[in-house]
Length: 480
Image (cartoon, rainbow, N blue to C red; front, side, top):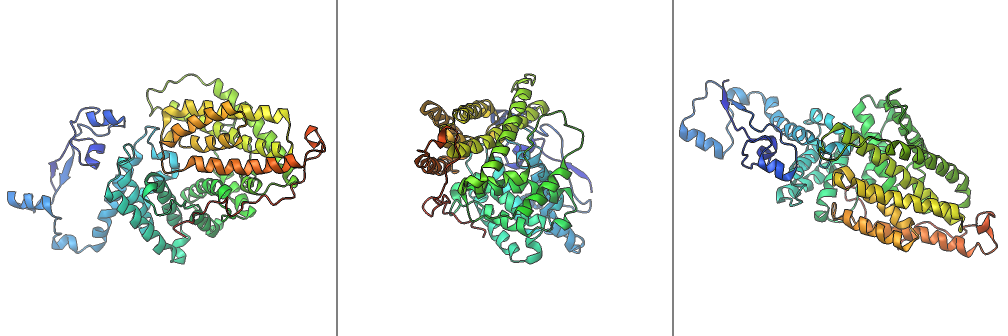
């Protein structure tokens, strides 16, 4: 099986079949500001020694698939594995992009384990095919028809897999839904209803058997997918998860944490079961929730101050090398801090609804809004993927802000971030959340004429504050 010299082009140019000038880095990768891997490196194609193709046969072979010999066709198993190997290579090439602005690692560390799982699940194979087909065009957002075709095919394959009770409960199917959700955020404008797949993810998480979780892959994917389910549940009352589920996920999170490695780094001390209550608190706030909300707010506020101090003492790194480990560590900690103060702002706004006129809470809310805008501006250099969390934080700030000048500033930054994922209607979500907060303000304000705003007991929210049909998000998950 002698080796025949092949192209010296880089992996990125070879993947999209573009001519590479074989420089290091090549001109195309330098223009797109992506990592250039393999440029100028000699590659070899291996052929059987007994194959004696003429020049005409070689030309013909370039135009059609090579018909396998009798010896090769005898092994059906090897023939089936060829597409999976090619698909795994494409995924590995995409995962090797370490530029924080385009690194798929943003979506979860467990993605690096997917290549070895390909070939065993039609749903996962189809989802990965849609991902690797669309990813090279993510920078310019000019997706070819082939990417849309594979996305639609992945949805059909997933629906078929969900009809199999065994396959539906597997980690591969859960991972396939997550990857399809990623593709949807890129190709959203081509989807039928722009509906999130949060309901499908929640459905599969409820079916998960925690007693049979053996690998880190299964553990990590459940932990990762729990967060978008909580976020989607805020605006989608159809998503309902039992408290026991979040307790089980919290126990998985504690097992996943490396003991003694980062104990000196300030982090959020709020547990997952508490965060899981945010959707219910936002949709249907009652005075009975006040003690737990207040305790959670004090804890988050204390964590945010410690994290802010730690972030201020971080040595300057510069932003010239976006694949630098130091830059990636800082950006992740910066993201953690921004998310923590966003959670604090949500609880602060709910407490202000129960205690209108509290000047301390108002001042802290203004501080949180300013911090979110500041962090959004600092994280702008990591866009789009490295700062994909920012838009959701700005949505909360937009809904909670009271000062007109501050609101205008938030609106301007949010409009700028909207260009990263144009089909995700962040402003619509901000309007929905602001209407929900305003409803609480109106109810509590109309019941605080007896002086409770100056330190008395919180008003009684006797009106049902759950989401009405006119205010709920109408989309239904197209997978379900």
